[in-house]
Image (cartoon, rainbow, N blue to C red):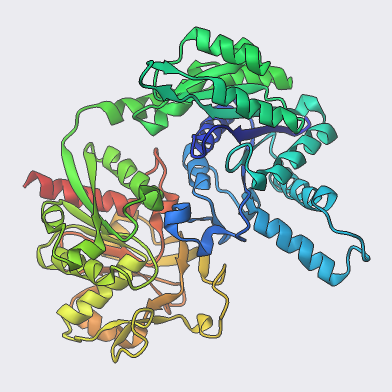
Amino acid sequence: MATKYLFFTGGVVSSVGKGVTAAALGLTLKERGFKVAVQKLDPYINVDPGTMSPYQHGEVYVLDDGAETDLDLGHYERFIDIRLSRVSNFTAGQVYAEIIQKERHGDYLGGTIQVIPHITNEIKRRVGLVAKTTEADVVLVEVGGTVGDIESQPFLEALRQIRNEVGRENVFFIHVTWLPYIGATKELKTKPTQHSVAALRSIGISPNMIIARSDYPVTGDICDKIALFCDVEKEAVVPMLTCDVLYEVPLLIEKAGVPDYIIEKLGIKSTRKPEMKPWQKLVDNVRKPKPTVKIALVGKYVELQDAYMSVREAVKHAALSQGVEAEICWVHSADLEKDKGWDIVQGADGIIIPGGFGSRGIEGKIMAARYAREKKIPYLGLCLGMQLMCIEFARGVLELEDANSTEFDHGTESPVIDLMNDQRSITDLGGTMRLGLYPCVLQPDTKASAVYGLERVDERHRHRFEFNNAYKSQFEQAGMIFSGLSPDGRLVEIAELRDHPYMVASQFHPEFLSRPMKPHPLFVGLLKAAKVRGNQ
């Protein structure tokens, strides 16, 4: 069977839900027995999101092979339960860098380098890599941004060319658009959708399906109007209301008959019936009334919650497994330094300190870690959260008053967190950290080994600094346990406190491997301890 391609474009506004739609549809196709692969094309000129501010881009999602990617890849992995690689995300910056490098090398023999064919050919090559490396039956490709963006034009042109090269019978375009609601007249408007489809058609692409996103019910006459003016079959105009449970989207897509319509149009047959009962059970459990536990997430980018997308979802997954509702209370760490927000921390059943970079708000996070240690509040530290737990321990228990990380204080006399040896000669910031999947050996009779139930695990990393082993014996004598180590024993991967209900922190990012049906053990441990505290 020839590889089939589903291309997702967005209309009217960005962040309309293309990523979730692609992820949910990928799940329904996988349930039908198809081998599915997913790819995100980002039109910005940055080489990757690794050096971008979370306020600009949201979370940087890290894959097994160390690729720093768009947060939509988190949706793909969580919904479809697949492990993606770096071919599943590329940017305009990567494409242009590749072409310019070849031009400098003389590969084009002095020819004029142009968007067409050179840039579009490179885009097509990278799209083709997904099918080659995964041998997928169906490849779902999402184009970031909105139709009409000048940055997107080379990508859309490349997809148009792919359709002609692989055959129209092997390509299906899905346009995800937004229906704005006019409060004064109490009606949904289709004109922006018509304009976005017209923009698509002006470059030679006619969508085969329109997903009409809305916060309000979409009536049949609106769907008929979209079908008429956008030249799409009525059955292919699919209203998709905003739902309160993210994981209901696959059920809505299934109910609307989207996957069956698509595979019929592509001329392929499923090998089994989809089994969506586990997802229905999951959604029912989310909606079921449950006791609430409060989790204070102390971060520095909390104004944009997408900066902690995977952390938020991992908390939800673990809470479901424990039969509780997790209320995430967002606390800006800089506010704690100004004596604000402490009522939230003090009222929490558990505290999470996630990853981050830079010195802003660091002391507030350290103060939260101290509160968790002294008041015996269940605590989970993620990457930076582990480093700050160690800094606080050095200051509060070992009485090393100036203990710090050399990331924040180059001249500290007590560098309990220091730059990794293989990072010392690096000057470029992009893609040069310790990135991707690394093994961790768990020490017996520890909280970490208890929650994992394993002797060795593999987890995803994204950091430059590490615990300084020169202080290891001091920490251990004072009550800290290094319960997870690299196989050679050189790197501290997990640290925990001996006399504490649950104060555990990892140098890696466990949130990237949490799934709705398979919550991550470290988050389960936190929610279990928080549940106990909430019942006291």
